[in-house]
Length: 627
Ligand code: ASP
Image (cartoon, rainbow, N blue to C red; front, top):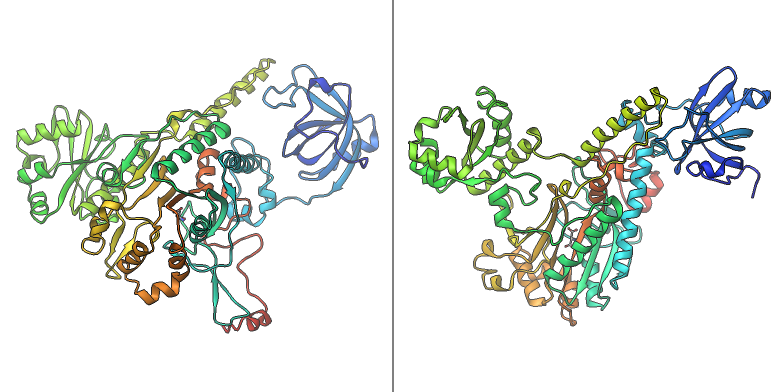
């Protein structure tokens, strides 16, 4: 071992080491320079240790005085107890310090573009700057904790599946386009000019072919690539836990995943999740929550009041119902005071949301004192009001919001309002918000105790089961009508099996065919989706035809699959879970870039390397590309 190499990590020294020599390697987190002493906190990913340089060794002291933040060091010294009153109960190494005897600067560091030390009240530097210097940003403690968590998540997944006879098998990155519904990233072939590989949107077809090949129980922590416009929780390349099983039915997959999710929460967050997860029919989820990924941390269910609206004297409602529409409502409990009548006018906060989702307007009533108020209240005779009150559980201070439209617009608009109001009215707490409050309160207690020259050991925050509401959404429709393209489109992907009892309607009434598909939802996020697959070649051919793919077209694109299905394909099904989203929720962040070591920005650019970037004309020529 070279003399400068560490004997301990920066998170390791305790009281038991007092009197012993130790060498630490790490980066200067902070410096505090006094007349006769220099203190530095030396950091590595395991923690930090206070190192003290004293004036008795003048050369050493002078060298220590010059140290700047993020200099990379080796320090040898002797572990000693901190002076009484100088202990820190909030860090594991807080009872000791290293009295330095030898210092070696392993590498200097110029002043940084931003600070990587995380102080509780300090705002982070601009994200673009942090992404440009991602290797510095990754030195931050919270990112190190999240990437450590991500490692743990993958380890738990591998252990759980290995113990259940799954094989981890890699599938190609250079492949053929799979229709998951997004745009492909294409890679031009040099050998076959004008031809392209597609980077996988998922390993869907390969995993089905593995089932046909007899590799029952496959999984892969797979990179998937979709060239989509990015939203807050999307990245062009993301990671899925992709798995597939042969000889299974839906409940086998759901039960397996429930066990895995329970393990993940227990081992990564110390939270015990109750099994089984509730199952919601798709139609029910849409009717009650206006969404196929409902946030179940709060109620505010949507109620159908079409019958009452039809019986009222309100022309807008009556016309909507007469035209085949529905009238649905939510009761925002206690919100009457929060939204003034002016704010509820067209163009106001809530009407704007309803309009964004296609509604022509938003009607409302408040319940104030002992009666309904608002401009449409007068159109509802007393018995209707009594029924409305009972159906929506209306009480003093409540605000009832109505949308009259076709069922899908009413669901989408009220679903969006429900999500918005859930957050605005604080009907649930995000666990990380509670953690931030808890940590700030504990920090204040540490400071307070220090002022009184006492020690206080802060209590760690524990997330609780009620912070996480998981559910399965099942029985999705198989197809949706694409009005723009004037054809039926698959809701999941075209390899999803229709429900057996709906097969006879495949050609005659595609809209009523349900799919053997399921989604896993967590706190309003879709964290996974999968299905039982089609394993009969004739059914696959019928589904392709239903999607408007002619026989020749289907053969050209998926001939290999149709042939494989004819070669003794077993019944099979599987699922994919979004590893990034799971890590976000387990790690307590709403920023997907926090859980990816080297993410792209919102425009799909890597600000650190500059990718995508122009290439040499020679490279383009090789590929037969002219731009
Ligand atoms: N391949 C699907 C997806 O990426 C998941 C599955 O059906 O297993 O959404």
